[in-house]
Image (spheres, rainbow, N blue to C red):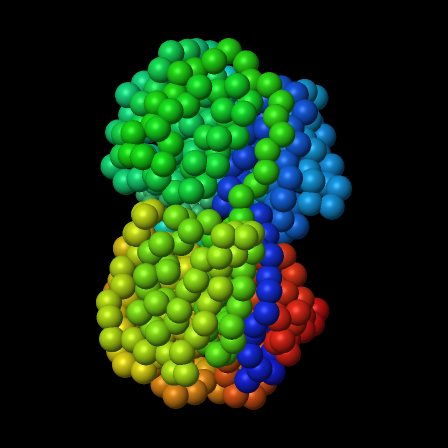
Length: 419
Ligand code: UD1
């Protein structure tokens, strides 16, 4: 397991091309199973979760080949419908193979995804919807054994607009018999990307990006050529790191409507964001001193994204004033706060609420990231802190960022990865 050595105090700034979105790429990779043909995906990020997903595809008998950032998947040779518990435990999004395998073969056996560092993360919404669509779910020895000779469209209401459940239902419904309507569906941009991809493969989907998505099942899907959109969470990460270190940064690739809630929050700290039409490109100009004095709540899109909560918390540790963050999506997503306090931050946690009193400076320390975004938040803090920090947990950070240490170093940071 690796760790980062960071000498803080240098500004992070310059130009950076945002990579392809992890959370868009993962469901699209699972969806490749539904397209019984060759799929070409451009702008695919080289991150550990993508590698793990490719291992699953290969384990199932599919062919997958990377060339630069172009990924070619051929699922015609699919020969298995079972994914072991160890693989599923490594990456929660492997649950999306349930919908994809059932949609293609009517069968799927998967290890139970279990819990994870940011909360309980059950899959009841996925399974309840599947059962309504004709899937028989048996649980044995910590395995989900699912079968459905006939998958039928259904009118589904989600109690919560779960991203994963919406994606899984979309995958299953794309090849079901008849129409499926998902009410209270998730509206995240990654849902839109998945629907666009499935449509490029011949699926009939309407209303993605709204609360009601309609899917008219088709018998077969074909291959497609598709470009993975830029990662809005990676964009937010680099904007926070730049703002905390007083650097001006210009990001290429992010889409404005995907970052509106984040943009509103970071502008309240005194940063100026400018969208330039060429690229498109987003420029951040930080103030002399960041300020706070507001409240923030995470929530399903278009609210502030929970994945950027650790990053904005990291930024607010250096903002003058007091800010309160409510985490409404995941019940245990503050593990980074205790580590930030070891660097001199002043944060109090009370259940799902965090109160952050800004300090003038952070100091270097030995800290541990315990999940992907929490780890990135600690790196941003370490880059802004005085002195040297050791940040453990590169195995989490690498799940969703492509060589983040090289990216920060290219923007002026003094950071390296040690094994
Ligand atoms: C996805 C993202 C993750 C992001 C999250 C919320 C991927 C690979 N991951 O995760 O980065 O933080 O959306 O934007 O895209 N829930 C249930 N029952 C269910 C499903 C979910 O109670 O069956 C709850 C979860 O415990 C959680 C909330 O709903 O509290 C949100 O989960 P969900 O939207 O499903 O997140 P993921 O798809 O797991």
